[in-house]
Amino acid sequence: MKVWKKFARNPLGVFGLVLVVVFAVVALFAPLIAPIPADQQGGPRVLGIPAQMAQQGFSAEPTDPSVQHPMGLSENGYDIKFGVVWGARTAFIISIVIVALSLLVGLSVGTVAGYFGGWIDGLMMRFTDIIFAFPGLLLLIVLVTVFGRQVTVLVLAFAAVNWATYARLIRGEILKVKRLEYVEAARGLGAGNLLIILRHVLPNSVSNLLVVVSNDIGSIVVTFAALSFIGVGAPAGFPDWGQLINLARNWITQPHYWYTFLYPGLTIVLFSLAWNLVGDSLRDAIDPRSR
Image (cartoon, rainbow, N blue to C red):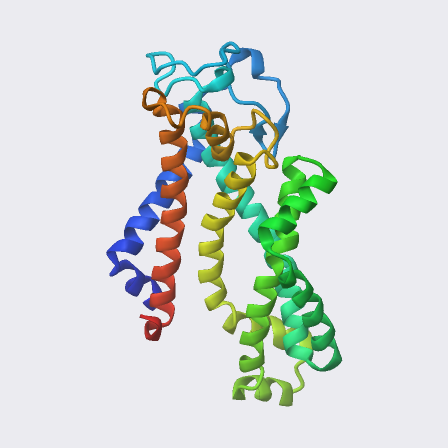
């Protein structure tokens, strides 16, 4: 409760949270805001997202906004509004799944390494260092190139790269917490390792991790869009903001086609900004000394 009160006093944090809620509402009501065309109703889906954006013809040039397509059509006739709206759902689902998988692995590795220490800690942290030895974006490109340009492959590749950050962070927190008096008292009363970890160590070690997770959700979407932009991300036509930027790159230098890159570019910036504002405000609320 104290954390929430401190968070609520930060106007930038509240603004970021409002933006997150707006994106969440758009993602939740995507089928109503941008209905799937009748001829695509039974089409394939990936994680509940249509595998293909709504398409009107196959024009090599973008089509200006109209009543039927208020944000216009991109190259190859893809509906920009459909891509922007469903891209919000893509951003939430992809980032949440990636963070969940990364947390599952990172918390497991970091907790075991930090709590038990010794050779277990050394072995797990050396493996973590191997992950850190490779540039994250380069490693993602390699994994996607080797295993195929599919959304599920991208999700697993992101998780394979991201877990190491969580593992190192939670290990450092547990190294501090496990030496505190209440942990020693629980151990002295005969509590087992699993009970101590779940009831005493982990709950008091994850607060700083929440800040990193919040910032990561925004950065994951930016990186996901970047991969799509350079042609190694989501498959062609998938409703992803980076995919729309990719379709607009031939027209960025032509002011008449401003709508092809403005709408998806603005959504990427606002989504990332929202989560970074929330993360920074959480950090200040949890630890005022970080101001």
